[in-house]
Length: 370
Length: 72
View 1 (cartoon, each protein chain N blue to C red):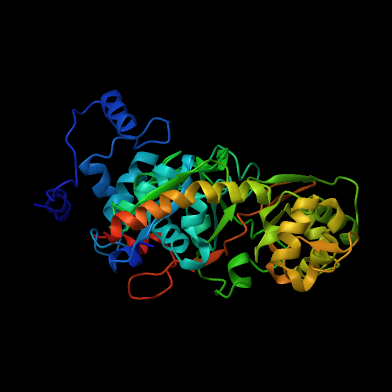
View 2: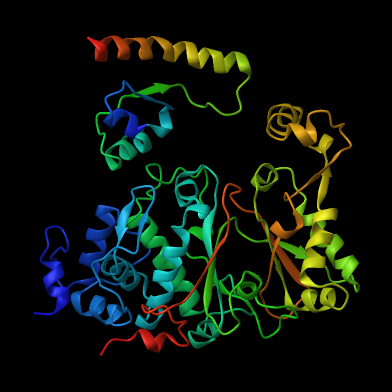
């Protein structure tokens, strides 16, 4: 008997159903184990093929997923990855992303259960992003590429089925978001003028890494006319500066996604840190642009040292310091960037892809058993 | 809250109607399925101070009743 068959004999570890696609899907929808789209039935054989890319014990939890704090074992994650339509070689990144978003600074409980519409965004860097063909170019946030679509979907299914993010029960989002179906991209390192996101965040360039961000959907920044860094950053700063963002009220990390053409033009004048400083200084709104209730009940109460006596012309930044504005270079040709506000009460977490012995993985094939 | 409950203190969570199911699920997750949940009118956010006080006044008799029941 295989290890997997032995594990599946534990009470509640498996269910038996007829080998029928429609029947299995009806059963899963009925039990709420679904995002509403058709699922690939997680048969023993398919789950075992997924687990072939896992170098740790299949029944030992790698994390507990809020708000249910369900045990995220590789076995359970693999079942969800199968259901999402993942290829087995994607599995190491799924485990890594779940571990990253279960770290305390990310505040997954808040992100899952809040009325806000955020979803965990997964940004992949390093050689494994290229190995798995994760789209970092045209339509990176949209459909069309299996790894983007199904890695993000596997994460969502795990958040629902293991974490209990069931709409109206464990997920109290007023609206939800299309990003809750799938939200996974790679950074366009080849076309970026700056160091990759994971390098900026302390990891070696040869590492592969995921960065998870508790994020809203992207909001476009169209600028076809500006030729200078200052011109482009003025447009981006104007799009960042909004009154309805959670980021204004927290130690947050709003994300600016620069299209490569914008990034290259900006990098002709500014380093990435200098661009952040520009955005921090210019993405500001006069206090008087906010409602009187928000001024009195939030700004003056929450940040009394800054706003207790401030006049209505005092400028409110969209982050608490320049370094907190994240910049990633993603996308294809075109004069566009995007602003992605966050849940606010969350910090992005970056984790490198490592083998069980602690070595950095150079390829997902190193995870393969047998 | 669940830790306080496990230590034997009289505890309750006050929540608005739409969050009752989340509260019940969390109570089960944290091993205190009988944690009292005192429901107040939704919403709690975005209220004038007078309305916040009205919510509190509506909750107080339920809190007092809970204390009387648990301390008997």
